[in-house]
Amino acid sequence: MDNTVAFKGIPGGLRLVLHPNTAWDAVMDAVREGLDTRRSFLENGAVFFEITGRSLSRGQKKELLDVLNQGVDLTGARFDVIEAARQNAASKNRTVKGPVRSGQQIDCDGDLTVIGDVNPGGEVEAAGNIIVLGHLRGVAHAGRDGDLGSVVFAMRMAPIQVRIAAYVARPGEDGTGPALIYLDDTHVMTIEPIVI
Amino acid sequence: MGEVIVVTSGKGGVGKTTTVANVGTALAMRGNKVVLMDADIGLRNLDVVMGLENRIVYDLVDVVEGVCRLKQALIRDKRYEGLYLMPAAQTKDKNAVTPEQMQKLTNDLKESFDYILVDCPAGIEQGFRNAIAGAEKAVVVTVPEVSSIRDADRIIGLLSAHGIAEPMLVVNRVRYDMVRRGDMINIEDTTDILGIDLTGVVPDDEKIVISTNRGEPVVADPKSPAGKAYRDIAARLMGETVPFSEAGDSAGFVSKLRALFGKNG
Image (tube, rainbow over all chains, first blue to last red; front, side, top):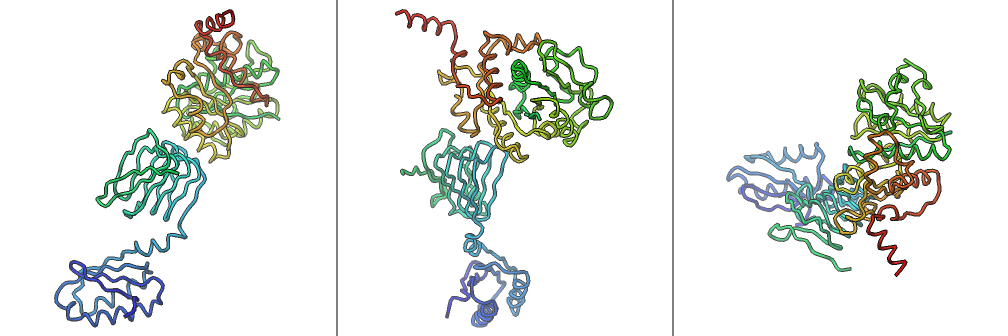
């Protein structure tokens, strides 16, 4: 079977990973087909669906829910578009010229690049990574929608505060040279000096 | 056609009024026609610093409301030719005028004066918006302290959002002895954060306190280090190139002695 729709078991239900670029009708056909082959499994009890892989219009969501509802004790469905968002991020990336001054707030749905400084009291926020080609002295929040893999890079790292997803750290305002801040496997915020 | 320059800082108490009084006086001493405009409605100070408090009959709000003519509210300075004060009202508040009215007022003044220096109130609310409304240039005053620099940074951002892109920076109340010991933020770090051109560095000078209480700008005192700094700023506003010197400042008794011995020995 092709990868138009991948079915994966999750606690209490099924995850459907929809291919982002396949025609919608083909996706729906694959969903119907996949549900039919798993009918016996689905009739065993309450099922929760998690749908991910591509962002859907309201009409597409309704169509999909109608299909999922047939002959299934549906407890709910969650549409999770992190994967899709990541693939669309390229168009949402943003580059701004600094300095980002005190009281200014820069927000971005993709990766954010600041050419210049982020001053104390200034805030930069991105759904993806944050790259400061200058002195980071303010607040940076990477992965603000929950992406734990996001990083913060600055040519000089002296931020008041760095946040990645829901984690907050105060790396210290003494300042270092170029550095990268990321979450390690145990979600501890790690600062890694970069030698250029 | 004159130039409207707003003197602002965000934070209070860093020396906006003192800067307006002294730089304005220095500009007048050099033959310019100057208006010092107090935009701090409800908390006026500039008249006191200039020693002109007892001459106020009409004020800025009276002009805007049409109670008097523009010329009637302008107070001629008692010492310097060509120097005038436009006092703020003390009994009203910032909402007594609008940015549009301030713009008209400064436009009218521009026709007959070379420089209009606007003393901006602290803060970033209505009073700030009024004060910058008619200005085409700005001087941002800061002292070498973290909180003051932070506010100056905010102000620079707001000024640029209002179309005043490259304000001039005055670092006030610098103590070179403390800077040398590393106990005070130095000028370089200040300009590094703020990223705008330096127009003046004013050393901390106790003569300022004395002259402010007396209502006589210190700029006329040839011996005052701060006075020299203000004269330099005025010259730079007029487009002259004046080198920055640490002169005046380090001129403590000991360093003068040291220089003397150095020369002789």
